[in-house]
Length: 190
Image 1 (cartoon, rainbow, N blue to C red):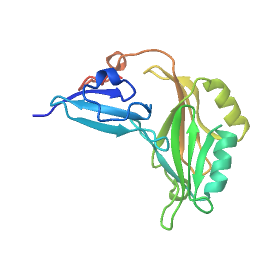
Image 2 (cartoon, helix red, strand yellow; image 1 turned 45 degrees about the vertical axis):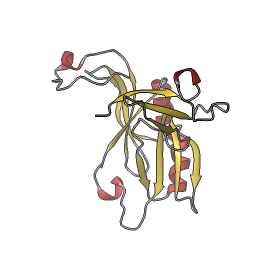
Image 3 (cartoon, rainbow, N blue to C red; image 1 turned 60 degrees about the vertical axis):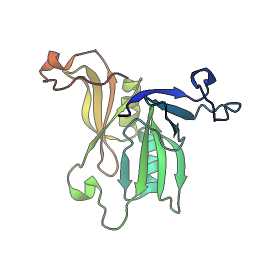
């Protein structure tokens, strides 16, 4: 049976015993997975799509207007856009990436539906500054900044299409058991 052994950056030739690879041109975007049977699989990093994270896709009725609103009110920054109109874009919110896209026929926003469909949490360092800026720019504030029982300092706001956003930062390190949660399985360590 083949089991996973480790993942290493392909720029380290000392850990590769038989290099059929061109390590004379190392690339920090290529990683090598080493299996117990010594077989290797290259894993490519894609600068267009972050890996090992949830990448939400949020639909807007008027994407061009939404991009401008998200930049102005929530301080998101546009990474790239594509298609006519545009039809989609990737934005950064703090260290998180968010895909935004133009609604297609039959797709409705939470504002059109009359109820929320999800809540997205973005972690920020300067939560109070972000809150003040968003409120001054006209964001609909759903929850004022507060510390939760599970150790987060956060506030909630709604965007122009009714999407619910939580902006948060860690206030205290709290174990789930400390505030009443029941742990079924230990969380993986980064």
